[in-house]
Amino acid sequence: MTHSFVVGLSLVLSAAMLQANLKDGLVAYYPLDEPPDSLDIKDASGRGHDGKTNASPDENGVETTQTVSVVAGKGIRFPDRPAVVTQPVKAFVIFKGGEETELQAGSDFEATQDGIKLLRGDIPVGSQIRLTYHSYNEGLLREAGMKGSALGFDGINDRASAPLDQTTDFSNGLTIAAWIKPGKRRSPIEIVFNVAGGCGLSFYEDTLAFRYAGLFESTSKHGNLAFEHFQRPVDQWTHIAVVTNGTDVRLYVNGVETDVKSGLLYGMVANPAVGEIRLGGINTYNYKGLLDEVRLYNRPLSAEEIADLAKP
Image (cartoon, rainbow, N blue to C red; front, side, top):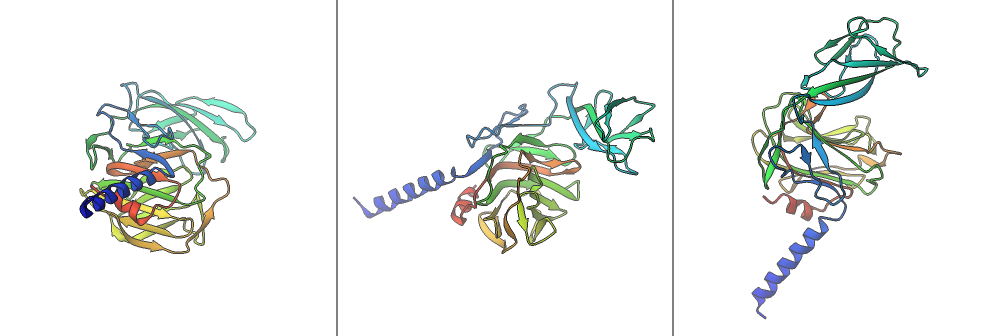
C-alpha cells in the first residue's frame, strides 16, 4: 500500500466524518432548490420543519387573520405587511372583559394602505383588534445560487416561514449559517433570519447584527450585538455564520472567523418563545437579495465545520 494511497484514503475518511458531524444538532436546513413555481421551502434536515413562502396561489390571495392591540394615537397596522389586499377587511374588537363585537367598515373603521383607522372613539386602549384580510403577493424569484438555486426577496414584503418544534433546546448554543447575496437595500433594517422570540440575523443599514433577545440571557440590555467590521456586501455571494456556545458569540465570513464577542451571554431565557422560523423579513423590516443553503443548529459548530460549509 503506497503512502499516497494511505494519505488519500485518510482525507476521504476525514471528509466523510466531517459531513456526518454536520448532521449532528441540525435543526433545520433549507437548500432552497424547489422548482421556480413552488410555494414551498423544504427542510432537508429530516426534522420536518417544512415551510412556505408568502406568495399567493391564485389571484384571490391568501386569507390571513391576525390580532393586534389598540395603542393610543396610532392606527391599526397589519402585523405582516401585505402586498395587495384583494378583498374587504373584516375587523372585530375584543374588549378586555372578553366581549367581542364585529366592526362595520365605513362607520366603525376605514381601510388604509397598511391596516385600518378606527372611527369609533369608545374602544379602550389595550383592547384587541382581530383583522381578517386577503392579500396577494407575486411568487418569490428562484435564481441561480451557490449550490443549485437560491430564493430571492424583494425587500418589500417577500418572506418565507416554517413552524419550529417548540421543544427545540438551544441550551448548548446555536449556529446560524447561510449564503447571502444582498441587493440594494430598500429598508434601513432588514431581517434576514429569525427564530420566533426575536433571535436571528439582521442588517442595520450596512452593519450585520445578531439579535439574541428572546432566546439568550445577556449582560447587556441592548438585545443585539453589531459586528462593526463586517459591511453588508452588494451583489456578491458571501457565506456568513454566527456561532454561540451560550457565552461567546463568533462571526465567520467565508469560513474565516472575523469577530468574537466574549462573555456576552449566560444561557437560555426561561421558556423561550420558540415556534417559527422566518426568512426574509417581518413587518416592514424586509431583506432585499438572495438566500441559499440556510442552516440552523442547536450547538456551536467548530471552525473546521464552518469552513466546510463555506466551500463554494
